[in-house]
Image 1 (cartoon, helix red, strand yellow):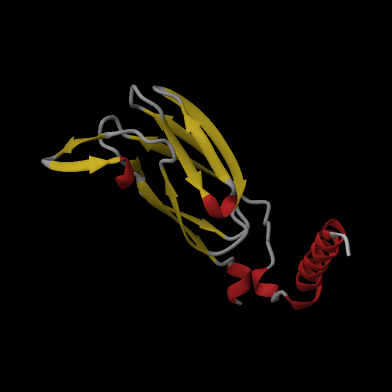
Image 2 (cartoon, helix red, strand yellow):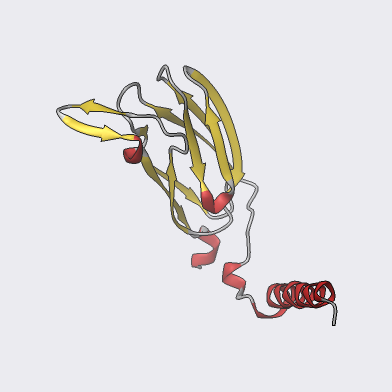
Length: 145
């Protein structure tokens, strides 16, 4: 049998399996949710501190997040939240906006996605890898009833 035909048949089975899972097997609690609420937040990459402020952000499942992100440094940073498909470069001394909807509850890290060096802050060495925060997504109030 032709190897390309075999690959096509396997691909069709994989796609059909994914569709069947989403339609018939996925628990209702894990389905994406949107509430229509908009939450505006400001995140600052602090100048020469290798950290985001705030480091913890709270939202409710289904909220649309409009994040204004300010880079105070004179070199580039980035921000990424893998769970929600966010990955954006932040040019030096600039402000960007990122919009996404938090469709799942849980704790999700956000981090600098552009290597940005290291330095000493308050007597402690901080690096690119210290630029990590947490997005805490709570369940919707109506789900708790």
